[in-house]
Image 1 (cartoon, helix red, strand yellow):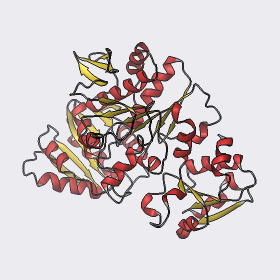
Image 2 (cartoon, rainbow, N blue to C red):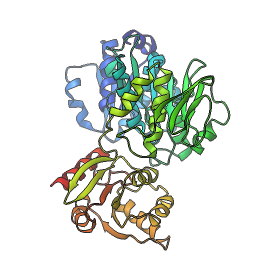
Image 3 (tube, helix red, strand yellow):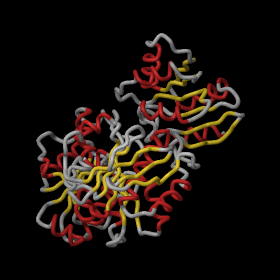
Amino acid sequence: MIDFLKQKLGAFKIAILGFGREGQSSYSLIRQAFPEKRLLIADLHEEVQLHPLLKDDSLIEFYTGDNYLDVVNHCDKIMKSPGVRINHLSPGVEHSKILSQTSLFLEKYGKQVIGITGTKGKSTTSSLIHHIIGLSGRDSCLVGNIGSPAFHFTDRIKKDTLVVFELSSHQLEYTAASPHTAVLLNLFQEHLDAYPSYQAYQLAKLNIANYQDEDDFLIYHSSDNLIQGHFSAPRNSARLFPFSLSMQQRPGIFIRENSIFFSDGRNERAVWKLEQKRYLKGEHNLKNIMAAIGACVLNDISDETIREGILTFKGLEHRLEYVGEHRLIHFYNDSIATIPEATIEAIKSLPNVDTVILGGFDRGIDYSQLADFLAASQVRNLVLLGAAGKRIGECLQSTGTHPQKLFYINRFDFLKEIVFRETRPGYACLLSPAAASYDEFANFEERGKRFRELVKS
């Protein structure tokens, strides 16, 4: 990778825009490639100048504080971190000037990469694929949006290493390369505060497939109308493998005779029987499993190993995570659910949901579908948080038919008394907010951890 960076970036003055986890890994690798090159570091936070990684580097020029984006006028190439939103950049910045760690990594290692994106399910699907590959004995690493920058792994990637890469829209928006195996799970309204339009968000996601060729594979959810609309006409020359719970497409991954089948267009076989035990509950997770089966089969993982992987994979924190039974109430942490579709799937996946905790930061998402679903559900109590919770409640009241009790609160910690008082013994309380967390919390993980603490205390 060092030689690759020398070839790609040697002639340019480089700025690293955003010095979080990914920005730090970009700096480390670029500095290895160019020990004598002057680098520009730009970050909103002025304390970045005191970062231990930079303290002995005299070849750094800093742009910090409110004017940190001025760096774009003083460099040839910008290594933009995902945390720097596209709508924060000057509209006059040329697209060709912006680089990303993701794009460089895919350009170098793309033929070894299984890339996974989607609004929801990408962490679970990525982790399941990595789990299955690990059971096969093949060398693999899990990188990307799930928490580990890809550049951290460049020194351990060999020719036969499979790289499982979870890709967010922010990582994909400035890519000029695609993975060998691309997985597109779904497209829902999300991150609308970070893009000029919902269409712009979708187009960023679609970059996962825009640079594939005839040797590559694209696995996508063909029952998602938005995705199907984008692929109704050929976008590239990759081999297409749609998956669906309701349609049987060949080649593809589909359900028949109570089993998940894989077809390469000529031959097909049952890989997983639906009655087999699995920790990943719900219809949405069944779709994730189908996508993982496709990715693993196409990368020569045996059916036996795939079955063992599905059987033993226990899921991730904050994703329909069972917190435990307390005072005869069953508690589930689904803090990752930041959109209505995820909350609907969570409620459908669990038996006897009596109380649901909803709301948080309001990003202007349409809650009408969620309101209609809740009004017709057996849920008895809704604890509604913050601005998003208020709007969900208003939307539900506009249906004129909701039987639920509505409890409005403005602090997350206030939910505890309500939940233990109102939830019936033997029933479930579900945190599945359908909203972002950053009115009170830094991220959904912090919110989920606080929920566990409140329940267990």
